[in-house]
Image 1 (spheres, rainbow, N blue to C red):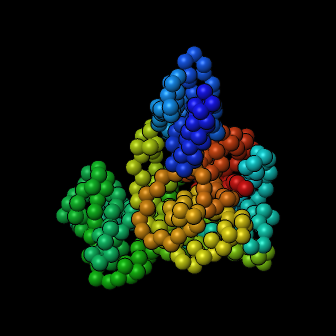
Image 2 (image 1 turned 90 degrees about the vertical axis):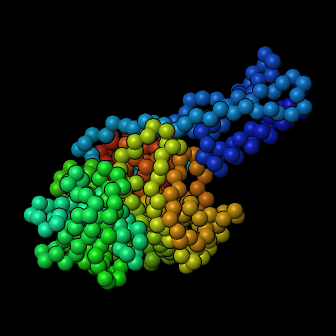
Image 3 (image 1 turned 60 degrees about the vertical axis):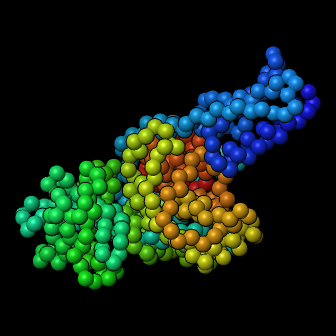
Length: 420
């Protein structure tokens, strides 16, 4: 019997390790031997209410496990959010947002402002920003030189030499393969529809002889910032400025890194004077961050690819902070996810320059960042799932109820939370 318990203990430890490493959906384990049943509960995991059964035969020389996995349900990330708490406009000034500070180990909550972030970082700590630049991806023009207005939403560049783009179009039923789409008062930019990809999706080829950067320059002249459809109002000129971070550098995103929108030059200078270092990754955030998820089983969700670059300079800075056991604060859940895309076996950050579609589900043992700044997200959204992976499902659920009670604002123009 002692041997069986020894092997069972080893197996339980393995399951706990595997749960943290692979993010599986095991909640607990029961060990059965004849009529005797002992119950061993692992760390609480979200979204599941089942057991993994390990049967130990009376005379078995080793453990013969049977494990049952179940799915992680999207509906577990649903909650009632009053519509009035969805911010429809930015604050009057950057940095005016409220900041809920959550102490992960104790559950202590503090209510601060975003500029108070400096008080929770010390000398040689690090903040990691996402320096992606949002493309003014909404183009308005005409089809085949008619007067009817059409809308094109640029999602991502498929091929730079031929200027091929994946897009969404409206009205989709009237935009067909072979149509020519013109933009600008004097048709300065023209695209041809090459393919139908979905009901609204089209592949466009811009009939343009310049470089990709020159094409971007034209798009920035004619395009509008893509205001998420969850913000129930028309586009306004202020969105052109406030849907862009002050440190935006590399163009390619269609959704801004929301928590980065609160960062001001004054805040960055205060962090610098305190000895806090800053590094950047570039993750071109796609519509994944704001579009509705249409599957209940999150493990089956097909996450669209996003282009990610982690430079050697960032790797050296982050790994130095890791080695010194300093606080590494990711500004945005997308930034935290980006860092987790390229971790070595030893737990260090590696360079990365490729497309990624990594989906982080709770529970997840984050290897790089140990602090996170993130906005309050909408129900059943991917950023909310990522925050739950960092903070823990139950605590995230509790903190969001506090945020609603305290009337924090949600979504891209909303308030933020610091998890330490």
